[in-house]
Length: 195
Figure 1 (spheres, one colour):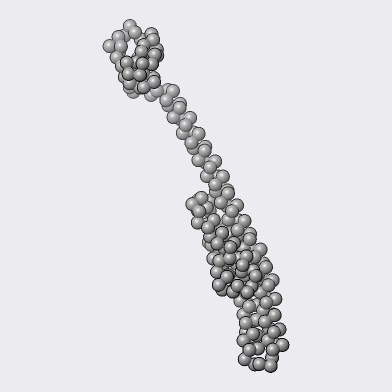
Figure 2: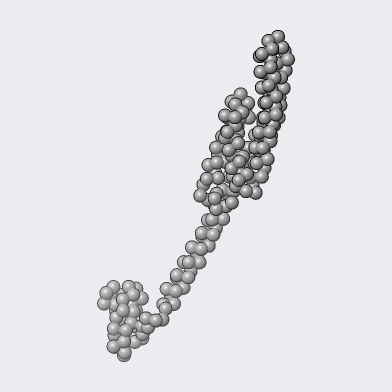
């Protein structure tokens, strides 16, 4: 008796040596095949090629998927960072205008010394503090393509602008959503792999 293996169900059968090379029927699955001697140490070439082909396709798919996903995440991060960059430039322009407006109002209302001094201090703080704040946010957004730390810095400054700079400056209403969107984009799983 010689062992053979059914190619359909992989069950090992025994036949007489004289039946090798002829058509036989599997006792389990009833499929008909040509009987070849079975060596359990010899790998099945069709199975090995199929497994190799499937592994190659899976690897290519994962590489392409990772590239596409990380590229999309990178573009998303950069678009939100660009929004914060332009918002920061707007803040650099509007902060001195608002600050000078406060100072001008302080000069006009010079009649009441206490109120004019408070407006003058507010004007100077809006000019200097606002310019420094928005300059930092703009610089961080510009460098966000180099590292995640800069991107997080820009996102946090953009998000915090509504509280720190106040809702009276229109730029903060643009910086706040860009900051939130950038934080969300940075915390996606695919974004962490792309940076």
